[in-house]
Length: 155
Image (cartoon, rainbow, N blue to C red; front, side, top):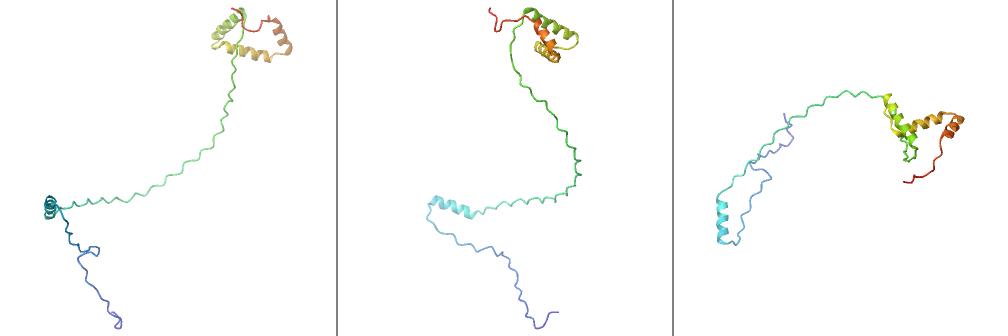
């Protein structure tokens, strides 16, 4: 029960028109040509029905994401040691014909062993063998060679 000394609250009845709707102002009279006046009368007499806006579909609430188990931590890879690229040097040599023929016979011999070898690879293999020999053996091998004149041979 309400307290007798409290003033009674005044309740106003609700109105049918929304508060934001304002009364429309009368149309202004303007000087128009007769053709335009007829067109405006036609548009005033035939009310145009506005198309109702489509109601947007209510989107369903997003499903709760399931928590994925954490990926196993991979052990760090051992650093791959990349071979250092060796700078290549291009050079030319002059050979006597008989020693050049020896290169061809050594290539055939390598093929018989199941290894394909190029002329440059044979020269490099010979260098590695000479590097492994003693100083006396190197001197003996160099003494067996015939000295050639440096430069390109005349044609």
